[in-house]
View 1 (cartoon, rainbow, N blue to C red):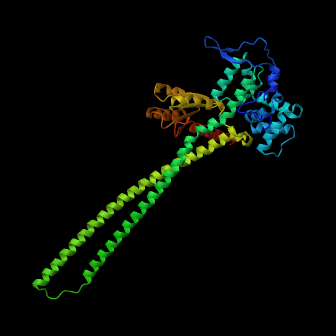
View 2 (view 1 turned 180 degrees about the vertical axis):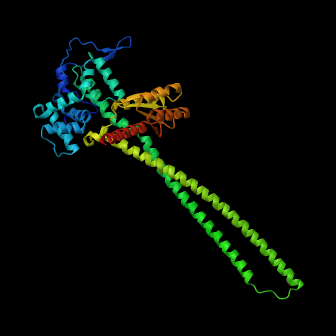
Length: 435
């Protein structure tokens, strides 16, 4: 393994961030005092610098994480265009060029530094207010909880007070983020596979029912044909000779027998037709269920395509383009209903994409009379159909139609459905702007 690899012997090496450690002196730990409050471990010999770390001062093993997380492919290409590099490079080649330039100040790292500072100016300004390590670590924890990763990652790494331990922590948090996002989507993938198996079983069942129904129709037609032939043969029969008492009795007996057989065949035909009607109704019901299942499967597949594209932008920035980045800046989203433990995660997802988050529990504890006011402040209303009251849904539809607000029912109360809805909102806005 290379010397600059961030994972070595089961953990980050102390030499990984040697430029930071050399400039800032010994590492101070964040500990709890007797009252349970967080404070810095006493160390009178420590002295902090006041200058932010430059990108070329970091160990090379951090450059890939910084370039991939803090710059989009479009922004990186713009920087390299200034250096007249990477005009025909693929996204992966572009990322590799950015990583190689990050450690060379005169070769282009200064341009990367300026681009990162300009792109994340707001985050750097906010983090500059942290006057000690405890405040800096608290800011990073808050940003991580809210999903505000790119700007906060750059701000915490370059902060004058950032220690080796805090840099290691931030690096590990960003590294694990893509795994956590992928794990949240496994349930939907399993459900899709179950639906595919159910569709296959249902299609086989319908095919068997169709065969039985067809066989019933064929048997009924054969019986009707045989009865018609018997009646025709009776009509063509020659007139009998002068009846005798015995002949008349025989004819009467034969006619009665024929009438009984005809009645039995008619009853059998009626039963067959009734059975055929039942089978036709069952077949129609099965067709309806199959169509609903196919529509549900198509919806899940579209959501998975959107989510996979977004996950590629988060987990593999070297192959992600700006079109895959989730951005709903300037949009206020009202989420009604859902599960209480998911609300902070949904809030972080929406605000991390630049939007503003509003929430109403759908009438569980909050009054439904608050809904019209919240809808009036929102640009888009989302609600999961499996975790919201009927009264809240009726109110949403009525008020949204009156105010001209858009609303979208979600398939389930899951982060995957919310993420797919945000990606569709972004696509709709881009189409509107293009027109």
